[in-house]
Image (cartoon, rainbow, N blue to C red):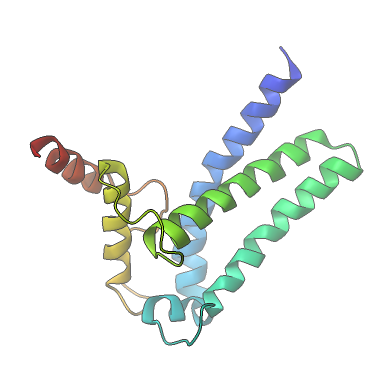
Length: 158
């Protein structure tokens, strides 16, 4: 088997695994131990463009940077590809969560695709809870099937 196939599998597997890591971290860390950093994201009790919640970008970037560096400088190629998967997930998170969902930059506003509508709807349901308890929909790219079914059915009717 070629090394590039293994490398792509490591990147893809890491990307998929990161959705689970993000869900777990969002539910149990952001809505738990580190709620003090995340709560301004739910309440919008901040001024300016940045939120305390944006520190999580740095927290999540550190493992990716470490893996990229280890893979590059110490010839741990598997670590490089893990770091690449983490970094690609981080970029996807930025584009989907910050740009598409929260419109921090006013682009991608009018998507009519059922998948993107389902992600927006699930995230809106997550933000209806202003406190750390009783949350729902902690994922980013994969949300409960009911949201996908609802939006797919509505797009099929139109």
